[in-house]
Length: 428
Image 1 (cartoon, rainbow, N blue to C red):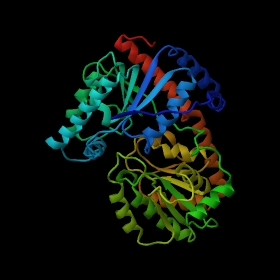
Image 2: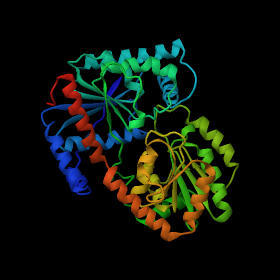
Image 3: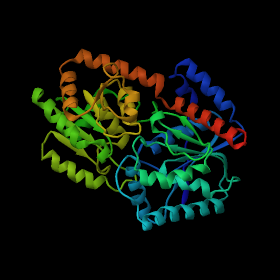
Image 4: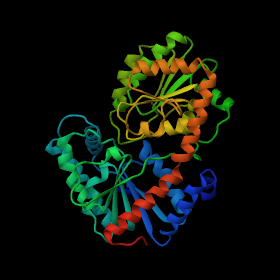
């Protein structure tokens, strides 16, 4: 199945007033080029994960800027599809192994079915953005009348991918007019023909409930309702329970910092609504064992029976925490880094991928290579409130300048204009 997600109308002016003037001017000019065209974004899950979150904000903003924009989400009939695509995701980030013939048949067969449903539905647009490897083969299956200009957006860190998988997937990119990556370093090395690369780092929605300013007393009340002692210091990582997010290393860093700050608490917030991540519960069991029943380690996985919405809980814990962590060992971008920085909090991030793009080490946060370094930085920040405040101010300003959703929309429109030129379609 394929479903169209409906959105309420957004107010573009509320976004534009937060931007540097040059960004506003660029976005307004780019949107004007697409006033008579239509755009489709298609991805694999309606909720949960960074891609769904970006599209949840970007599509309404695009419409508010006068561009006819829709978002479609696939729902494969075979539930094993997401087991296969999770393996593909991990392999593209460096995991070893090969897909079996059955796994490849599930992957391609589900997308064949979805392409047929798209053709039957009459769904079409001038420009299509296909997001991540779940959708990669789909462009070759659709007629140009349905998807005139095609862009593949890969949000994954491809610096050291599984070569077996790359040899099999990269030929599929010849059905695209342009590839969009989060960083220069993520560009695939084996792109066939003359398919070009456009770099567009992700961004956050400053007006979303997760990122809007929350009163400190409300944040403290939500933290208390979650079982956290609101009078004691807290460090938080917001991420899926995923091997690449290294929750075990976060616990090790907390334990080191706790030696200097005995009252310290840790929250690992991984409220998962994504239906394309079947490994979360397995990772959670391992992390729970590693926490070893420490009453000051709080693990949150299920979005059920909680005292507030998922977004409110994320906002509350990021707002209430003294220090935030994103200790990934591989990371395409890491939206939670910008989310925390936007709240004026010092962020300690793994020295990998897109986290390096967001954090200027020692200025708007800290980059670390291991749990020991992370623990030392946590302890240092907890001991120096002035340093926390300075790093936090710098962090918020960096996000305003570089990582808000209107800038990403501008990037996508620039990429679409280039892809239309390649396809010979024009932009409208």
